[in-house]
Length: 420
Image (tube, rainbow, N blue to C red; front, side, top):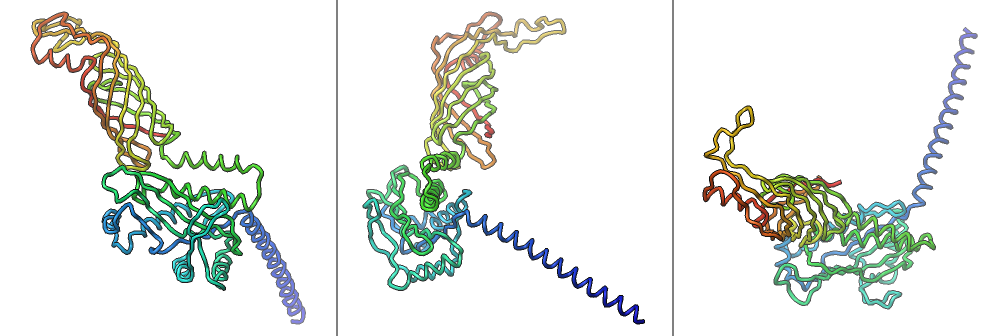
């Protein structure tokens, strides 16, 4: 019994020692992981976003009831969609050196209730509405920065939609202005002022690019303050190029499409390649075939409305060359290739020609990268050659059909594009 008891005690001691060793190893491993996470986080600037309440929204571009109807909100909540989209776009913007953090509603309300604003000057002598906390209340901002482990606090103080007067027609310019302050976690001033753009857009979803641009500049100010890099111009240029590709959806992307129609620049059935070099313009090349022969050409489109419209009207100009064709109507052949109905046959010679197309249409966008684009227009042939009957009979209907499909005249088509 004594031997068994000693063995049991020995095993317990050994097991305890092994458990302690395992616990120590686990603790060391956990400390290594935690240290690595802390070091990784320390390299990334964390920016706490503080947004204003509805009293800090001003618009002379729309009457408040009209804007409430447009955004489908009660007048007292008309600012909410703008705030929500602004917050979403800023907080979702990804960059390896900066992370944006949303302030929770309860904390945001506490800040809003204890914050005042006043007109001040930034280092560039620009006048703007800046944040002003009465004596002793800076500690609230500091405590919030500490709570969210933020290195910076971005405070949007006022949102303005300005114009020369109430908007009467779509397309009139509107200036969107953000008054803001950027502080360090101990309320030291990094930058402050106005950030603005002029556009005909007024719905919050169509202003995402403006909010992204604002976050881009916030990243720049944070990097400038945090690192004092000498290559800030190159850093900002890189950010700008990245942003431009995101801003305009298809900008910088290439597309391929199938085009079908009647009198179209790339034939009744053709292929089109295009390149969108910014949000307003693309250039395209295409080739195809229709009743008038093979067609090959090039063109350009100008999109009339702004970024992220579901329906984007466009105006286009195209050049196309048509090879001509010997068009047979109602021809029937036997197995030897001989005509079996010569009394009912019509053969028309459609001559080669160059054409210039003036076209209009609309692009229907989708997030999948596919566009559907119906269009219509008119083409002007250079030679204006009239199709000629070379064999068989002619009727008014057949002659009218041949004239319709010959170079020149009305153009009606639809295209399906895929972008990458």
